Length: 235
Image 1 (cartoon, helix red, strand yellow):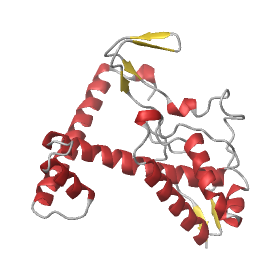
Image 2 (cartoon, rainbow, N blue to C red):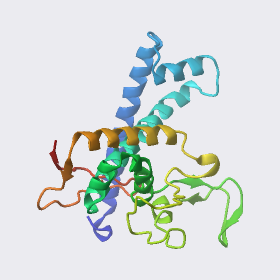
Image 3 (spheres, rainbow, N blue to C red):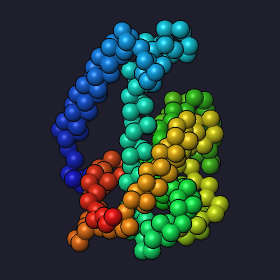
Image 4 (cartoon, rainbow, N blue to C red):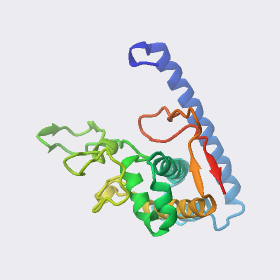
């Protein structure tokens, strides 16, 4: 659907679906929290409940939104990171074979995937006080959208920025944000991606794209990933 063809009715229908999904997800997490209260374990939700009950920086009203955040930030992004990594190393001729021969390259390959196909493409920030950035005056309450995907392809920062290069060094991408807003789960995401790619490469002698493959992207400007991703594997 092109931007010109989007009507007011389309937007209203989309928002209706969005609100319905949010309500269902909220109800799902609320029922899970209620169940966990009666049977606390060592899982993350139980830990959050204990923190709420002990008054440690989290309230009852914050529990469900926090669970929503963990689901999106801790699952969706890492899932896309792994599939983006597989896509990148088989799309670029010879990279899969190179990494398979030398698995020590996997961590730096993952870093290049984070730069080249950042799972989180854009953030949303609200200005807390009047300030100026890059000659642009920002007022308190205004919304700023930093495009991480664009910054990670900045030719002023990265040589041949549109080229996938697992030997890029240094690689100061901002796929996980920066400063006080740096992603809390970055070490876990890196660990998961490194383990997943190590096991995949160990298991399969080759992974290739099927004939006639076409990219099927997730239709969301905030994330970068594939909705479907068929591949041919050989043990």
